[in-house]
Each structure stands twice: as C-alpha cells, then as structure tokens.
Image (cartoon, helix red, strand yellow):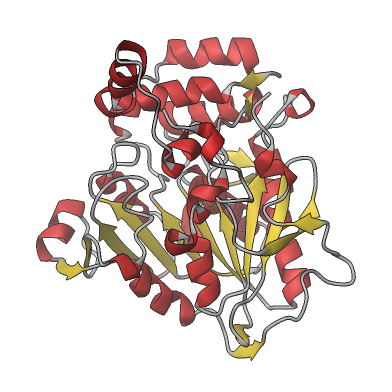
Length: 388
C-alpha cells in the first residue's frame, strides 16, 4: 500500500521527544518532554488502541495530537502496548486493565506527585480505560480527575458494518482456537478493516500495483496502517463476546473485571466524548450512547470526517468542522439542535481539559523520578517491534 522504506518509527514518524519511564511485559510508559516553562500539576495519560500502534497520534510534527497536548502545558504520559508474542499469548482482558491501564495511572501519579491524573482513551483504548475506571470506582479508589473518549464504544447496540461479522458461531470458533492461549494475528484484523472499505483500501492497490506495476507512494498514514499488532487470544475473545456479541459492558454488574462487578455509571468524573460523523468503525450515534451510561457531567462533541481523519485534525490546518450542543436523550435530536463550528475540535477539548488539570507549576527538568528512572528515549522498543 505504501513505500515502507520511506519511514522508520523514531526517525520520521513518532518523533515527539520523551523517555520510556516504566515497562512490564505488556506496556512501556512514555513520558514526553515539556515544551512550556510551566505545566499543569495534573498529568494527562493517553491510552491508545492496542490493536494498532500508538503513533497515529504522533505521525508528523504538524499533525501530532501528542505534541499538541504537550504544547498546551500538559505533562503527557502514553501507554505503548507491546506487540504480543508467544510469551503474552495467555494474557486476558483483566491483564490489560491491571498491568496496562491501572499500572500506567499509578506510575504517572507517582512520577508527577499529583493528586489525580486526567485520562484519554482512543477507540478500544477508550473501552479499556472506561473499564479500568469502573474497576477503580468499585474499589473506592479516587485516582482520576477526568475522562476523554475519542471514537470509542461502551454501548455495542449498533456496531455498524463490523457487527455483521460477529456471530455466536464465529466467536465460539475463536474461543476454541485461541481463547485459552494463542495469538490473534494483526494481519487478520487489518484484512477485516480493509474489507470494510475495499474500494479504498484493497482494489486501488491491486490495480496500480499488480495490474499496472506502479510502485506505491510514500504515505505515513498507510505505513502506520500496515504496521500490524498481534493480540493475546484470551483477551481478544473476552472482548469480542462481552462487547460485540453480548453487549454486557453497558449493563451494571453484567461483567466481572479484575474481581469486581463493573458499573460504568459509577464513573462520576467529568467526561469529554468525541465522535466522528462519517466513522464506519464506531458509528457516531453509538459513541453518543456513552453519554447515557457515565455517571458524571458529560460533554459531547461531533467532528466531521472518519475514524482517523476526524480525530487527527490540527487547528493550524483550518480544515473541517465540528458540532457542539447540550445533551439530549437521542443522538439525532442532539444533532438537530447542535451548533456547527468551523475548524478543529482540538481547541474545545484543550479548553475543557485545562479546567480539570489543576494549577500551573514549574515544568519538570528531567523525566521519571528516583524510583522510575528513564529506560530509553521515546518512542521505545515496544512500538518498533514488528508482529511476529
């Protein structure tokens, strides 16, 4: 699909400066270098999708969501998921919560010495993050100041075209083959997503590459799209059954995660929910349903374009538009009364986040802490690892 030799992770994609300050068998935690003399006292923890590499949020300097958040005066931490291999083949959903999201929250708090951390989850990273926050709420642990969800699903009532590929028979077959150990190959997931948009993501490359013999162009987004990530079978099977197939996550107490019954309504921190209007992976009305599930004050913003292009929309480019408005019970009714605002949604989010980030303090002079010393420069080894 693209000229892979034109890009290298850490050289010309994923180049925002920072350091890996923690790692375990599942994640590396990256702390980014501040670019402002002062920062908010509460850090921002970003949980990207585990089904692909995080650097979609850090492709180039002029469209990096991570660099933008740093420039707004936030100490940004980011979870870099490991590309699962045979050693991780038995890990489950709870491991992704405990060793992934909740471990990252604890380390970010320890390094920053903040009372609480702001959190952001993108796509399945948002589903994982909300689940982790519900577990913390059930345990009575107050560690989070706010929640941002970007094109994420908590209610799987309408999963769009992807839902057509999920059935009891298909899930049971996966459970039988990899449910107790094994890997879901990233290439399989990539083929599923490509099939949803075959006219864009399959046939042009067949025609131009195979039939016409043309070399593919150098395109950073397609390089990222082809950088596959494996998942542990038990984790994937739990996710598939409890969300896409049975839609249990939205029901209070219907799932037990990390040993406690989960109720998304117990998440009472302020929440910012973003959806993209042309998203074919997370239909925007489905993302809107999250406003009815969370227990705190919720703001919903709808952006133009799709799952990726809608999210990665830096203000300087002055592209697209977004909609804002007061919550309604129904998504379509919300859109009818919403205000159309030109340009990126990033400034609206930055303004909202700033109100939950605490006072300004001097930016840290170095990464990590006495306990959590820098391990290696960003982007780290995990994101560079190719799918085995």
